[in-house]
Length: 428
Image 1: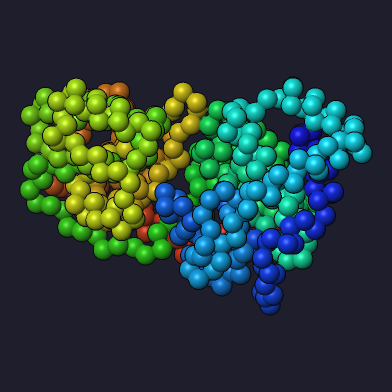
Image 2: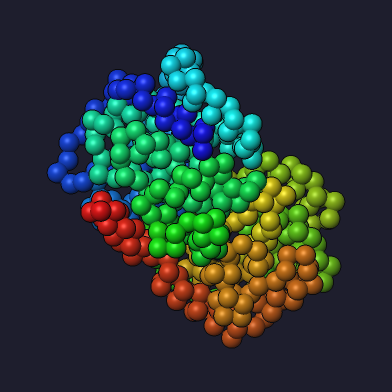
């Protein structure tokens, strides 16, 4: 806690330092809500773009701030990008505060040596949030937003927490699987979230994990993400030979793609005709392509790299089955409910998933999809063979899956729930 107290002390000396570079203050008759992101818009985080789109459709007056990348405009709304060179001004602010308040420096050093960050990345994420709050404090005092919402539990939540400490701006925050589980979770997650008006998570798994950390049950709310427009349910392909298999994932450890390649090899050995496509990019791509070559399946498995969202939908139109082979990474990171799963369910693509993380909050075995242990290639082969041949089962799964999406994954319906929470927070 001392590190955050130290950052708050720095804020007190920064004064109106954000006025000169935060852009003009926009006047509005409606309550202004400041939305803080790490990077916005980001191609791989379409769920956040849909959230913003749905809130704008609800008539919410948003001011969007991107702490790292992104910027430009979104839906005609300017996105204020943090000019990170301004962080250099902290080089003289920290020594100045240390000279005036040596006890704060002592507390900070004590905190740093007794509670290390889980990773250097998480350390610098929190420092980025603190720097943003320091340099935009004056701007926020001018803007006087009715509420500040952090879209992530890392840098944005740090910024929101410190803006509250400095200016009294009430705030809320979202906590995603990365914030909760990567290397045991964000450095100061509980301390930042315990003062939020509410905490938004998109899975029951995430909500339960936050409650285990001691947050009040009444302030942790599960509101799922959603689709801003429901696609037409495509017909089941009458002859599913070869079986068209699709995976949409970042090529990182938690996606379990080494296991998935073993599943493809087992399908080939069992004589199942199939064609597989893997959409996504990441640090493991070269290694995975080499593994596919060694397993003798390179001719059947195509690595398509990152595709824009409209091309991902084209791949879903092509596919018979979506595969999700998620695991818990060595770092503890795991998926929540990957957005591509409800997307596939909405359009009529069958889903087979591992039971890791929150995927089974949408994919109920033999009801809305099939579930198989990622290490059991035989179970996956049986599941895929059945989906290739059993029309009655496939149709039942597709209908039930679409019903789940209609009920739980409507972005506009879920945005209304989120807006109600924002309205309640501002009223209090």
